[in-house]
Length: 144
Image (cartoon, rainbow, N blue to C red; front, side, top):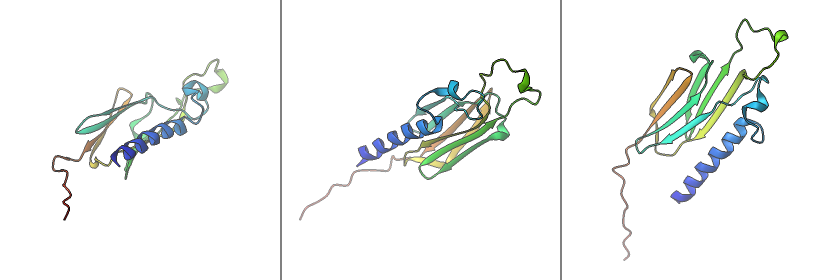
């Protein structure tokens, strides 16, 4: 049963990332300047925590939202164009602006009460602790 839960989690991650891109894998280039973009994200899993690092340069910390719901981590944000940007003078637009949303399935061991988020040098780091499963054990089934 645990193998099925892990498979479901992996499938959810792949689907969430594809849906967050909103394309067939075109990446950021397809949406440059269009008002939607997808920050690059690294995910790490350790025995005691999960770590997400998202590249969000140019996004103000006040424009970021991190939410943990049962079984899901969501990061949202918006990168706003500079106030002095004059679109009439644009010759090339490669830096996308606008909103983004990324969602990730969390394992059952994730502990929302042990979550924290920090922003430094354009990188959002979200750390979600895991519940201590040291007390778990297999219980043998006895037959009559």
